[in-house]
Length: 111
Length: 111
Image (cartoon, rainbow over all chains, first blue to last red; front, side, top):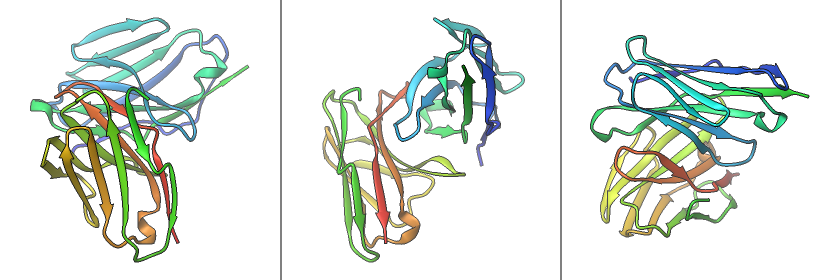
């Protein structure tokens, strides 16, 4: 059983701080990694994808991947109250295997 | 919603009745998916399709069937709805092993 784990939270950070969200996965053959944001009552929306070890930056968001440690993280700089949402980690294995989603981490950014 | 719609958006039905949910995409994507999302379980794959008339089971397929007679439409059918199928259902599309994009969701209540 392929598993993706995340701390369920809630993770609370003050406005302007860095929020750090973590995700671990069990399938060492996983090749593609994705972060989604989901507001309450809405559908998941893609924030970032990452395929290679290291960091990938997009605006205030940075995804970090370490395949040796089977670990992927998302950093949100200068957190805003509008970033308050549930963040889902998704992992895809080799050869286009289907996504496995983590349970999500609820982030609360306090004004 | 990235060219993908779902209908109906809300439905209340009685135990034992058949229910069909529709997913429609406008961008000719090959891969389509049906997920359900429940508290404590996250997003779980029900069925997926990799082309017209090509479908396969996901993690939680029991009690569900799908059909894809046209590229743009992917139907999910609950043959005889049960209370355990009360959930929020999301449809998604992707290109091969790339990102998945989600529809707005259908909230189904089985009484």
